[in-house]
Image (tube, rainbow, N blue to C red; front, top):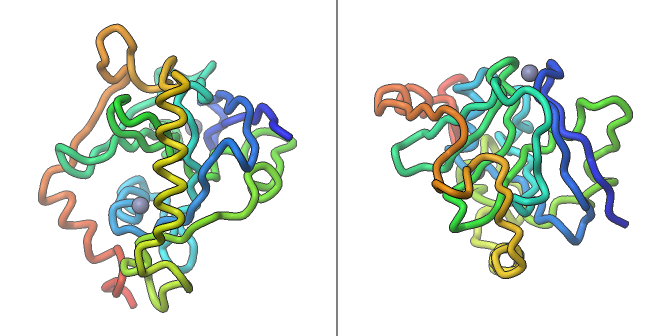
Amino acid sequence: MSRDIELQCRCGKVHGWLRGASPNAVNRAVCYCADCQAFLHHLGRADLLDEHGGSDIVQVAPSAVSFDRGDEFIAALRLTPGGLYRWYATCCKTPLGNTLKPRLPFVGIVTDLFQHAPGALPSDEIFGAPSGRIWGKFAIGEPPPGSVKPNVRFLAHTVRKLLGWKLRGETWPHPFFDRASGNPKYPITVLSTAERDALRPLCGPRPASA
Ligand SMILES: [Zn+2]
Ligand SMILES: [Zn+2]
């Protein structure tokens, strides 16, 4: 069964929709990579990481995502000049979605974004359980089972999903890029090397605080 699911930042200023959500329409994984951890630490939202530093993320087609409120609060952070665009709500620092350029059409959304609208359903009910745990070598403490070695089945699934979205024309309309110019629609900040380095001790596998 597919559903239209509301997206909402923690404070409610940014609101939108994920259309046609179902376990089959998405790719859900928990990512332990150092960059996902660094991003949430930089935002001051480490509360969204699980006890091993994991981010619970669903990848969806860009055209399935739209925002209808709070455009003025949308911005992106890049940890390095060539890194992912990590979109977030500037009002309350809620992650809104990770993307590359539209050439590689996907939006990876931290599932917290689906939990703030009134009557929100549990993520497991909307998307099914995560089908992969990846980049476990950066996990905090004991890496979760199956997360360290490259997960070939999961990788193949990801590539299949991405290709499908591309071939079916589900890149556009893109929630974060303008079709005519190909440019980002919202402000971008790139971290300096010093800012990026300052975040490293906070991220796995052995956080300085441990
Ligand atoms: Zn907000
Ligand atoms: Zn990651």
